[in-house]
Figure 1 (cartoon, rainbow, N blue to C red):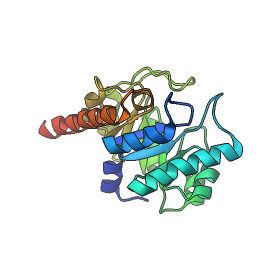
Figure 2 (figure 1 turned 30 degrees about the vertical axis):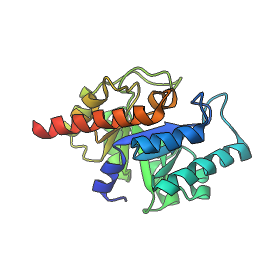
Figure 3 (figure 1 turned 45 degrees about the vertical axis):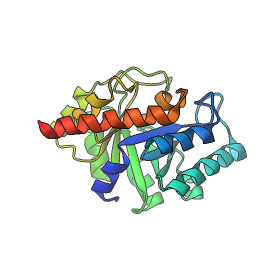
Length: 224
């Protein structure tokens, strides 16, 4: 299991991207996003246009090298074997991507394990079975995932905290500069984004502004 304080800090601005998510060069986008202040990166290569086989591994390695140069945690979405092959810092799984205990056994205690949840029950199970953090969402409507469930809203994060969920939480889904602060103010430790940075003309500036909003929400929560 990963030390909680460090995990919270890594979740502040969590960037997710695959090679086809942006009209720009993905390597350039990642470098710019890092300069703008992202704190974690997840390689998520999914969809009809996603790279496969050796091409996918090449993309993952190229993005991982950038993360390593800047000491940004590099996680892989769903694919445990790929994460292990690359010696990534961790893996993120959904509810249909394998048993939490089995994934933990495969990756060991020294790597990060994130779990997507949509209900309080799922959150408690993930917390009990060894997750290092929870991905909660979609918070708002999103077009990044075709199979996305109904939005839960920031109030769900407050409910999770009220129901005894103490794991670090990152909110995901439909997050923009305009609503980012509401998520961390509700109790999340950070925000996760795809489109807001991938589609931006200036990823560095967008990341910096999103990070500012995420911190603003935390400050507001601390002042209450």
